[in-house]
Image (cartoon, rainbow, N blue to C red):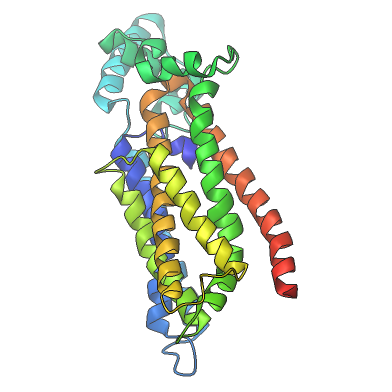
Length: 320
């Protein structure tokens, strides 16, 4: 999905990420409506049937996007104008084979053949007079001088690395560590309410802040040099509470940790979505797919490392 998104305008990247986070929100809302416990409004089977029906919506949306060319960075009118020129040249030179003809009829930017991709690239250069290297922003070229690393084979590496590390740091904590240790933190900080109640607040409110973090990228850009330290400090507070440290045994500890968790989800969503928007904006089109794939790899590796680390930590917490 990530390489696919970066071929679209930034607002559609935000929409795609927000839709993914919205899936968590829908699950949370369904859980609230279901009211699990002794007075459950409907069975888990009904819950799964409703959720399964919602999974059809992304398929319909994908089909519409692909066939209507919604939000593609290469304007369809530019591609059409070039294809008309190619069609005229084909009349003079002779018909093309069926494989080439089928590839030209495909609107999916990820599944077009090399001939179609090449024609789109040529079409863009044909109308604008700019190639891929000229398309790259000054910010992209400055990254080489900043890191002083010679990466001729992968020229996008220097620019993409800081964002990959940012995503790795955030996902290592959010989906690896925090998901495992937050129940311990809420249990130790609970005063006057149960730890399970605080944990439910974290996950339910966190779904809303997760969507808000994705949507916020369409309106504001928070600097990473501020977001990352704040996220780290909030995560550290939850870790200290999970370790049952002094200072987290007051009536204010529980609400503070809930706010810390939810704000952390907001920052995590903002950083991930903004990273893909930056790659789609500043990296040349020819390297954009590889750069976005690097972000996805960093996402997966950091999550796995976080899970492994949290497993060791939880086994120690369980003995306390």
